[in-house]
Amino acid sequence: MSDTIFSKIIRREIPADIVYENDEVLAFRDLNPQAPVHVLFIPKRALATLNDATEADATLLGKLLLAAAEYAKQQGLAEQGYRTVLNCNEDGGQTVFHLHLHLLAGRRLHWPPG
Ligand code: 5GP
Image 1 (tube, rainbow, N blue to C red):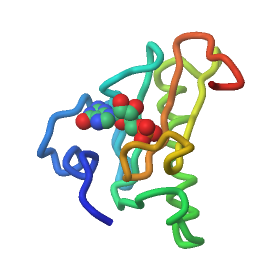
Image 2 (tube, rainbow, N blue to C red):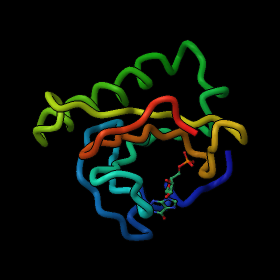
Image 3 (cartoon, helix red, strand yellow):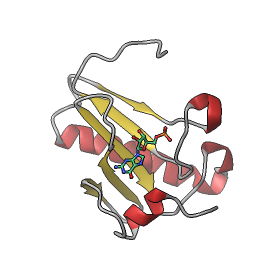
C-alpha cells in the first residue's frame, strides 16, 4: 500500500499528540475531533482498509480493539462509555487509507449516525 500521513506519524516524521503505544499499536488524538475525546488507534503494520485484512490479521485487529478499551479504562472513560468506529472506503467515510479505529468519548453520542 502507498505511504500515508499515518505512516509518517509512526516514523515520527510529522508531529502528532501520541497518547498510547505498544509494540503493534500507536494511538494519537484526531486533528479534527468529533467529541471531547477523539483518538485514532492504528496498527504499526499498515493495512489500507478492512477489506485488505485476512485471517493473518485477526490478532492485530483484536489488539486494536483491546488497546482502545485499555486506553478508555486508563482514562476513566470506560464506565460512562465510548464508541469505536472503523470506516471503510468511500461510503464508510474513510479518508486516510491506513486502517484505523476511532475512539470517541466525553459526550453523549447519537445513534444511528448520519
Ligand atoms: P477516516 O475518515 O479515514 O475514518 O478518519 C481519518 C481521520 O484522520 C479524520 O478524523 C481526520 O480528522 C484525521 N486526520 C487526518 N489527517 C490527520 C493528521 O495529520 N493528524 C491527525 N492527528 N489526524 C488526522
